[in-house]
Length: 165
Image (spheres, helix red, strand yellow):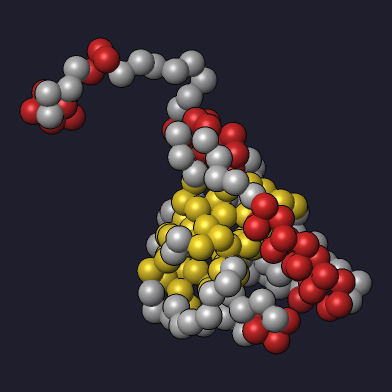
């Protein structure tokens, strides 16, 4: 009833908000956990987002030519399924990796964003990532050269990606 009172004060009629069959917060969370960010965006009416503070990582991205901002989200926030995504951060396109870095035998979940055409220091800043499109699963590669080639493909796919909705 507190929510209803707030809506009344905002001069909104609760009956004017249609219920949409099959749309629920549980459904959206399930889609995000499965990495289905495009389907979730259609239900949300906007791209899914992850927000966190940029923290130090292993600095492998710099040595590979793709420096990443490593995000530490607040505990308890839903993080979409592991994979590589096209999206945006700070108004720039971003290739985003959510996972364990299997090529390097990682076990801890990481959220890393390579901001295209960006050169600067983001450490300690809050960063909000929009997830537009799932590009692929995370993989271990035969060599670091193969990894770098695939990251290059992911970056090009990110350049071509369009925001959902």
